[in-house]
Amino acid sequence: MGLLSDMVAGSERRLIAARAVVSDAELRERCAALPPVPRLRLSAAGFDLIAELKLRSPALGDLSAQTMDPVARLRGYAEAGAAICSILTEPSRFDGDLSHLRQAATALAPYGVPAMRKDFLVDPYQVLEARANGAGGVLLIVRMVERDRLVAMLDAAAEQGLFVLLEAFDAHDLEVAAELAAERRGRDEQVLMGLNCRDLQTLQIEFARFERLREQLPTAWPAVAESGIITPADAAHVARLGYRLVLVGTTLMQRDDHVQAARELLAAGRGVAR
Image 1 (cartoon, rainbow, N blue to C red):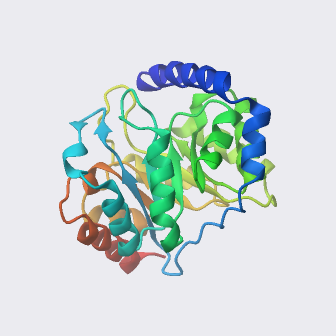
Image 2 (tube, one colour):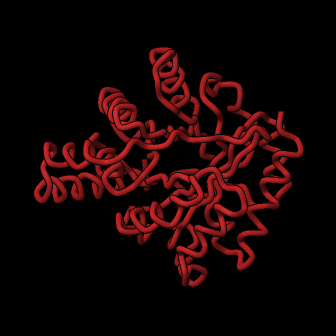
C-alpha cells in the first residue's frame, strides 16, 4: 500500500497513545454531552466543493507559507461557498493536529459549514475523537482496515451524526463500497463516495481514473472526485461525468486568491452539473 502502510502504523501508535490518556468510556461521555451535529447540506445547484486546509503535501512538501492565518483562509472558503472544509490531522506527513480541527470547527460554525477530519483512521475510537474535537464528518479509507472494522467505523459515525467521506482508489475498493452501500440502504446516515485519482505508490495523478471507474461508484451515495482538480475546466469535466462534489487541497493552498479560486471551481462545476 506504500504511503498507506506507513499511515496505518502511525495511526495505530497514535490510537494507543490517545487511549492511554482518555478511555473509550470517557470519550463516549464527552461526545454524549455535545449538542447534535447539524446535517450536511449540499447545494441545490448540483455541485459542491470540499475545500481542504493542508499544511504539507507528501508529494509537494511544505504548503504552510500560504497559511499564515488558517482561520482567515477557512472563512474565505466558507464565504466562497464551500460545503465542507477538510482538515488534516495526521502529524507525520501532513503536519496536522487535532487542535487544527477544533480551531476550524469554531471558525466555521457561524457559516454552518462542517469541518471534516481527514486522517488515516483505523478504529471507531478515532471517529469519536473527531466528534469530540468538533468534526461534522470524517474521512474513512476503504482499504485502510479489514471490512468489519470499517463497518464499525461507519456505525460509529452514524451513531454520532457525522457524515462520512468513504474513499476508494481502485475497482476493488469500489466493489467493497458497493456491497456496503447495498447493505446500508435505508439507514439514517450521510455518506459521500469518493474516488481518489492519486497513485499511492508514485503519488502521481491519474486523472483518467475519474472517467474509467465512474460507473462503478455506488449510485446511492453522492460521488466525490478527489485529487487532481486544478483548473475550472477540471471541475467542469468531472461534473459532466456526474461527480457531485470535488475535494481540492493543494491547488487552493497554492493560491493567494483562494477565495476567487474556490468560486471559479464552483461556478465551472455548477455550470454543467447534471
